[in-house]
Every structure is written in structure tokens, then in C-alpha cells.
Length: 426
Image (cartoon, rainbow, N blue to C red; front, side, top):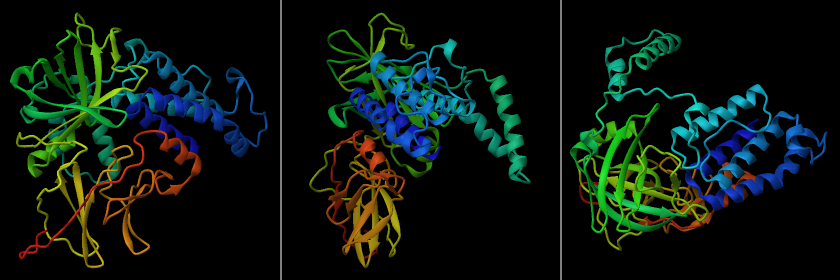
């Protein structure tokens, strides 16, 4: 079950961040490794070549379901019927439903269930959550809080009237938008989100409309459309963490949206019908990243960077760390053995955070590790010394081989020189 859970998480990330090539490679890899999985966990009691429909071993059934999900998404481009097509026991059916629900909530371009194949997700609102937190007395116990929250959530879902402002003030302003295919930036532009849904873009493109829809969990959906010079409508659908929006109002950190770009037929209504397919279908999905400062200024998220840039950081004690905003995203600043180091705190493999990554001494050189897939980077030079060797700190050749085929190729990270000012700041 533990290994299947790891594989399920890999499938989830691939369907969110990957393209057709990653789906095909992962499906083929899982299929090829199925005999080894059976040999280890079922002692090959029924053999390797049991027909999928006749398979009775619960873990193998679930593995078959993951492989079939990947193959169906690759073959069809967009999967609308997300019910499993292979037999599953009750426990694994629940796990499969959790996986597909997460894919829907996080905006996988491959999973777009029709209403007949998916339970409707009733929306909750930031305002309702804030009211609950500020008006509820401190709970007497965790159980008391859980019971109270369940009743509150049921009331919110029952009385929700969808009056949320679709054009919130904290998203109005100028954004830097980058289109990404296969981990590489293929274009960058500026988009201005105006009040009441107006979109301003650079010619020859023409902005159409934008809006924000509150999500069922912590992710809200921001959608905007632009008209290209050849008459095609491109729809950008991104997701922003509600907590980061609230935090940005206080911390003034940048706000970032990530999502996918779809080709929308000119006469379509923009609600995700049959005429919408991911761009570059079969050749790598187009993703996008858009970022801005909380006060409305631009914030670049480019993979490139200037040869010289001046940033300021509070004093850092030995063994501690600070996170500041940099040209490529967050920068980790720390002090090891009396020397200051600063590197990008985002792993180039899947752009996952390394803010809390382990710092160790490898041959006398401080090294930062990614907690997700174990990649390691020298903090003095940014050089990558290990690349995707497993998951969550565990060295696993199988998982490392699968995950190294997903996301970016091996890359170094940016390292910065650090000097100490007279007042102790860096």
C-alpha cells in the first residue's frame, strides 16, 4: 500500500505538471515494472500475465487502474468519464476516487469530468471561512472543533448563493505571464487585469475577459481569454492559493498563479466544452506562470537572470535561514560554519520548493537537498551533484528512474554572492 501510494502521487504530479511524453513514458515504465511489483508483493502466486479484467489481487488491480488512467489520458487528450474501467476493491476504489478528485481540484488539463460522472463540488468562500474563525469560541478539544466545523461547513454549502466578487481588488493590476512547454519558457508577455473583467494585452493580441471563481478547497481559479492575430481564442486557466493571497496583503510578497493554456474555438462559450483541447496536444502541453507584486507591480518569474542584482536580507544567525524574493522566485539565505550562502529555493526538476530542504556538509561543501526527490545542489556554486534519486528522502532506484523521466532535465540552480553590511543586514 505504501509503494502504491508513492506511485499514485507520481501519477498525480505527472497528470498536473507533465505533458503527453511524460504520460507515455510513465505508463510504459509502470507496465514494464509490473512483474517486479508482483514478484515482490504477491510472490508471483498467479503469474505475471493475468488478464487485466480477470485480475483479483487488489494491489495489482490498482496498479492496472493507474496505468489505464495514464494511457486513456494520453490517447484521448481529455478524459471526461473518470470512473475506473478495471475492477477495484472498495478500499482501492476510494483511493482512486481521491486521486481523480484531486486532479480535478488542482486543474489537470487531462481530467474534465462531465456532470454525470462527477459529484458536484459546492463552493465555499473566503469570507465564510474568515467569519467562522473570528466568531467561533476556542474549542475545548480537537473533537469539539471537528464537530463544530462539520456543522458549519454543511450550513455554508447549503446556503451558498455564489455572490463572491469575480473581480477582486488584489488581482487587479499588471502581471508578467510566461508560456512554458516541457519546462522551457517559450514566450513572455504582460497582461493587465482591469476592474469589471477587462483584459489589456500587448498588440497584436487582444484581451477579452477575466474572472476569479472560488474553489472548493484552498485553490481559487482565475481564467482569462485573449484573441490572437489569427483569430484563435486562447484560454488561460490558473490556480492561486487562497492563503497566499491573504498572506500577501500583510507580507507584500509576490502572488503567483500557475495553470494551463487551452485552445478555444472562436464561437465557443468558454465553459470547457468539447471544442476545448490543450494546446500542443500530443507534443507537450502549454503551461503558464503569471506573477505580480502584492502592491500591483510586476514580478518576473523568468528562468533567466541578470548578472548583477542587489537584494537585502535581515541578519542570519549560524545554522538559521531566511527566505527573500529574488529574480527567479524565493532565495534561501543561510550561514554555515561562519560563511553566508544564498541560492534559489526552487528545485528545477518540478519547480517544487526547497525552502525547508536539508542542508548538509558534503566533502566540506554545504549542500542543499530537495525534500521531494532528493536532488542535491552545492550552495557555493549552485552545481547539481545528485539528480532525482528517489522520493521524500528515500533512495529508490525504481522511483528515481520514473521521476527523472518527468519534468525538467538536470539543471544547476543560481547561487548568489553575499556580503554583510555595517548594520548586520546582508
